[in-house]
Amino acid sequence: MPLHSLGLRTPSVLNTVFAAQALFLLANGVYTISCPTAAANIPDSPMTGVPEHMVQAMGITSLSIGTVYAIAIYQRNLLIMLSSLPGRLFAAFIFNRNGGGWKQVAIFETTMAFVTGAALLWDHYA
Image (cartoon, rainbow, N blue to C red; front, side):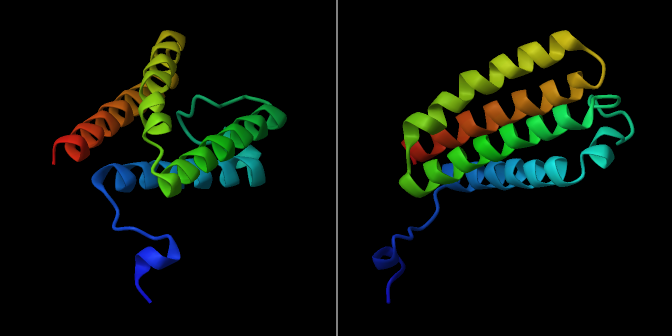
């Protein structure tokens, strides 16, 4: 049975990049929900000292965004993928402004925005 008859397609560069981000978000969500104390006590973590219920709330957000990314991959929803760019850049701005350990998160968000943007351009022009 061919893959396309199962609804599966050959992954594009963008889908691969988005899948990696979705998996990271989903894993982060599961970890922070199931182990909030451990997540809040990672050395140099921006979540150091954050109450467990807040860490779990962040985990739910990660699960939600990871789920949206996974659905966008399956649907090949370019608008969702494109809309992640300003969201990540805005998050990076806020995280950078907060300083401390959040600056590392800001660098990650900025990097992911540029990697996603490059993948969008690659798939568009390839």
